[in-house]
Each structure stands twice: as C-alpha cells, then as structure tokens.
Image (cartoon, rainbow, N blue to C red; front, side, top):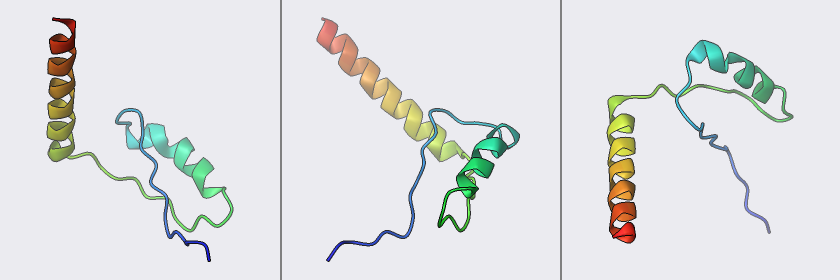
Length: 66
C-alpha cells in the first residue's frame, strides 16, 4: 500500500511581495486537485533563522579556506 500525502510545501528562493507572488499563486491554483493556495507571511523569526544559518555557513567557509 502506498502512502498518501495531504499537502506539499513550496519554498521560495527569497521573500516576495504578495502582489508580486499573485501570478504564481494563480498558476498553482490551476493544477489538478489543488484546493487552496495560501501565502505564509515572513516574520522576524524567519529572518533570525536565515541570518544564523548564513553566519554559520560563512564561518565554515572561512575555516575551510584557512
């Protein structure tokens, strides 16, 4: 028996303004079996997590170069 999924998460390359993402959301709604497409608003915790991840990667790269 195969597993069944209830949703798929799409992650954008970078944050987008809602009005700039409207065409993308309209296109996603056109797919078969798509019930809804809802944007997730960025918050400060996302920014903190991204900043920490970048800093960690930067430190690792500098360590590798030395």
